[in-house]
Image (cartoon, rainbow, N blue to C red; front, side, top):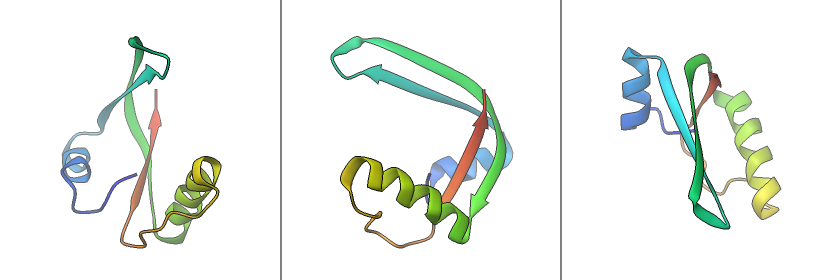
Length: 76
């Protein structure tokens, strides 16, 4: 998820390669990196459905800032 004019969105516009790094909460020295390509770009109401579902999982509330957002689905 990112804003449409963000550096991330602009970078992915020209090059679909992406990497996601995940660090263990209880051990910052334990991590994994997933490399892949953007398989799908989601905008508008469908993007907000995904963003709100994630926000509700962690905060119990929909995502509070309602500005333009893009969701990139990554194929690892």
